Amino acid sequence: MNDRKSGVLMHVTSLPGRFGIGDLGPEAFRFVDFLASAEQSVWQILPLTVTSSLTGNSPYSSLSAFALNPLLVSPEILLREGLTTQEHVEYIYAQESGPAHFRRVKMLKEALLMQAFENFQKTNAFTAEFEAFQQESSGWLEDYVRFVVLKQVFGGEIWCSWPEPFRYRDEKEMQRFAKLYEHDLMYHRFVQFIVWKQWQSVRDYCHQKGVQVMGDLPIYVETDSADVWSSPECFKLDKKFRPEWVAGVPPDYFSETGQLWGNPVYRWDVLKQQNFRWWIDRFKHNIKLYDEIRIDHFRGLVQYWEVPAGEKTAINGHWADVPVQDFLKTVFSEIDSKRFVAEDLGTITDDVYEVMDQYGLGGMKVLMFGFGDDLEKHPYLPHNYAENSVAYTGTHDNNTAVGWFKNEMTAHEAGNLNQYVGHEVTADSVAWDLIKLIWESPSHVAIAPVQDLLSYDETARMNIPGVGSECWRWRCPYLAFSDELSDRLRELTVAAGRGKTKNAS
Image 1: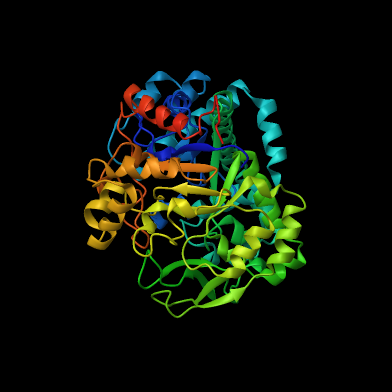
Image 2: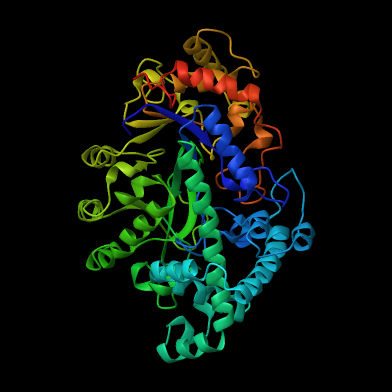
């Protein structure tokens, strides 16, 4: 992170659009245009991986650490490339605004993608690109498509309940299965190719406009995933392939009982024996998707909180060690550490900061956390930010600035906020008061959630940690990105020395 930059956090699913969910079509390109016109250099998004209704459609809970989400496919781009018809595109029209409708969108887009696959087979369009994609993705793609089709064959059952030959991936049975279901397997390869192709078009356009994409890499994977099915030896599972220990975090700002995520934790001894190949492949895959990557829950790569399977909360867990020096030395011997940002929120100990300093990893500063205690020394207030950091008003796990101000901020925090800002902060001013503070901070990168740019209240919140229902659904309304908003953001950005055309460090 060499130059002062700024940007906006908004997941792709939150874009406006005609099809019930944000996608990789025209609205994504229009948003990039808005960022460029406002002198923004970064678009931060949440993970692009496959989501499931069984896990609340959270982008942090996926069937695969590698496969991309088919719900992000743009029908309009499929039409433009001759893979569908206007009639089919109009048929799947859902709604232009309001929250994402994952279940309906999944049903409609699956039908559209099946038709696109049939047309693809007839026309042989993009054949060379498709073959190249399959070859480059062979390390994860075959495991993923076999896993998805097997789940369909066995009625959606978790893989550790499948018949024994498929639980243990018996070679003869898997070969027989692959021949019998070759059409279905090829369809899912095609879908992954289409999502990848559409995403790369959006990313290329970002680069044309001087915008970098910051992605997000969840530390854990789901038990019911292609990753655990294909590499069960890398996870702490019992003899029936069910987790013995699950991941979480102890009580912190976000939750009094901690967060019980339920993901299987890694067997780091086995990963070390394998020279951490799975992790290196995962990092390299993500570098093909993003310019910079936020490593979610970075402290879990130094020491992690594991909880006995079956617990109702995360309180009765304990810390377990990771061979962090062996791991990161191996990883960063192949991958540039400057591409990564460490999410260092929550319970962070000195050993985590020492590792971050050793490898030059910037951390995160969340301004909303800064007004409770001693203003002079508080690490989340801008005058104490290190240059090698990313400053936020809040993250996808926080309330919006307005929602925080109206519903969560104490009288003590309100007094500290007014004192720090230098005037009486109101619900109308708070979002941009916070944005101005982080834009003017020493941090090399400053990021505002799009909800704060628009001064939206708690109804626009993206996620409430520990609450599964109704999260991840928020979408931005049409016409939100006005010329007036662009002008206001550009003026602040240039004044703070974060503009693309002229950086004033």
